[in-house]
Image (cartoon, rainbow, N blue to C red; front, side, top):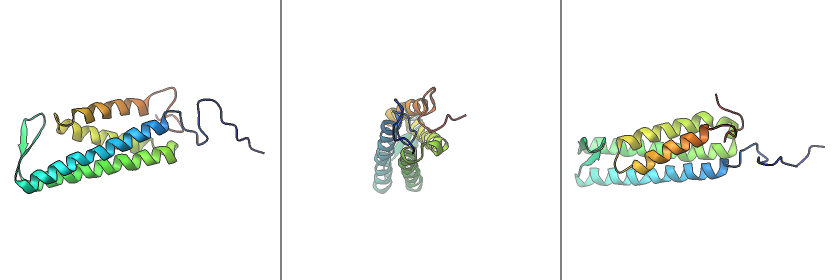
Length: 142
């Protein structure tokens, strides 16, 4: 008969002890992307511009602002979905979580200064999900 005992430091699904807390932070970060979505749609409809690349580029074209809002929304949704996958199927979550965080990092760096916190969070989360010896995913990612 199989044992229900779980070794110390792991969970029944083979997750590391930091998997669920990291997934929660990743999902919340994905939801925080909603701020940029609302900001860009609002600026597009009000005819205002938004600064990107640390203020080096000012975008006032409504179509471009709406496209950026959609990009922020898709990346935010990707983070939430990747966080769910991390909890439900940790062994299969490595590439989706890394890809979602990398896409978020690109948007956050482009949106500097308003997204400095997001960029720092993305870097920290990428470090956490890729660290050793206790990976967040079921098996170590190479």
